[in-house]
Length: 130
Image 1: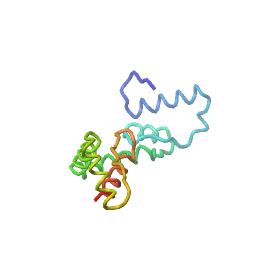
Image 2: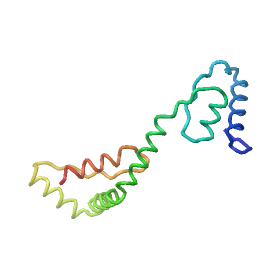
Image 3: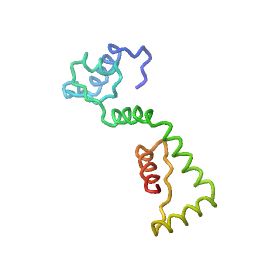
Image 4: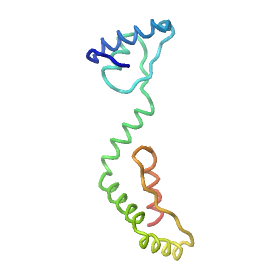
């Protein structure tokens, strides 16, 4: 929604009410799923609706905040994984050692910022190598 005025709770509420009237669904809305921004949650309250925080947004905020506590560890593990991904010689040696120790090979997983659980997968895989 492009709102050419300040995104205050009042302005957001007015715009949402206008949209619902345009769609002829004003009487059907009781609960609105939103992010956790104060202005939108206040707008929902001003309109008299229930606010349901978006689970995906809330989970993403939680994960992002939690990652701050392990930032240094994350950087180190990522550097290790990238080293083995970039060096064929090192990757071959790692595979040889894996076969000697466990009889099988596991490829290291590099995390991807757009995939929620890729950091977890990277940590779990590196842990199996220890």
